[in-house]
Amino acid sequence: MADKDRELRQDVARANRIIERFGLATAYGHASARIPGTDTFYISTRRSPGLADENDLLVIDTAGRVVSGNGAPNSEFWIHARIYAARPEVNGIVHAHPLACIALTQIGEPHRVVHHQGGVFVEGIPVYERIGLIRSRELGDQVAQRLGNGVAVMMRGHGITTAFADVRAATVAACFLEESADLQMRMLNAAGGHAQRIRAFTREEAELARDQTGPNAAAAGRAWEYYANVADTKPLGG
Ligand SMILES: [Zn+2]
Image 1 (tube, rainbow, N blue to C red):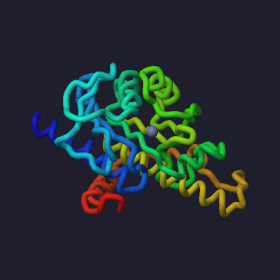
Image 2 (tube, helix red, strand yellow; image 1 turned 90 degrees about the horizontal axis):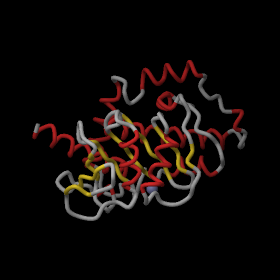
Image 3 (cartoon, helix red, strand yellow; image 1 turned 90 degrees about the vertical axis):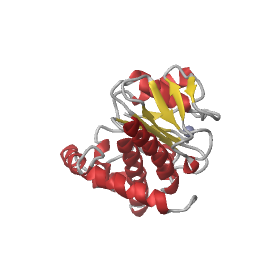
Image 4 (tube, rainbow, N blue to C red; image 1 turned 120 degrees about the horizontal axis):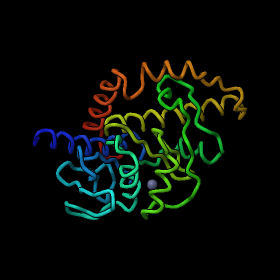
């Protein structure tokens, strides 16, 4: 039990460092994991995710109460709290501010599956339109509602949130989503801004890609291993 708990805290700290090292977040952003079988979750304190430490996490519950830990909570912890409240099967959440995803939302282009690692988003990604930080229970509920039963929500002019069965999958998916959005932007640019020229995957192709490369597929363990090892060796801001 103690070993499992330590591993979970290590995963949360690593997930936070990954989103910073891979450019999905700078000073702001956070990853969390539900403590199994509870309505509480581990989340980093209010500092850059790149500085997250497994021994310095907060435990917050779905009503927004800080149950244990030292330090201030991130002001947007409500995203995590209310998604965990709405989705009992979700055990890992990442909220980050990756630039290509933000760019897509601000030109009104929906996310489209344009490469294998985008396959996990085959069902489409809803956009949460409201500008501003998610600093209340009510706003957290609105984001959870927009997410619905999906795995990700794009937040216009703001960022993304991914929600999966574990924090590793949520983290890998966040990295895949930014990679996908970046590719989509490049394709749009190469196509002279004509979105219809992008050869987005058909549903069948996207499902195949999801099954072969998605964060729940066998290959995902390898993705987490890679991201985690790079995050362990790359310098802050690297
Ligand atoms: Zn945010």
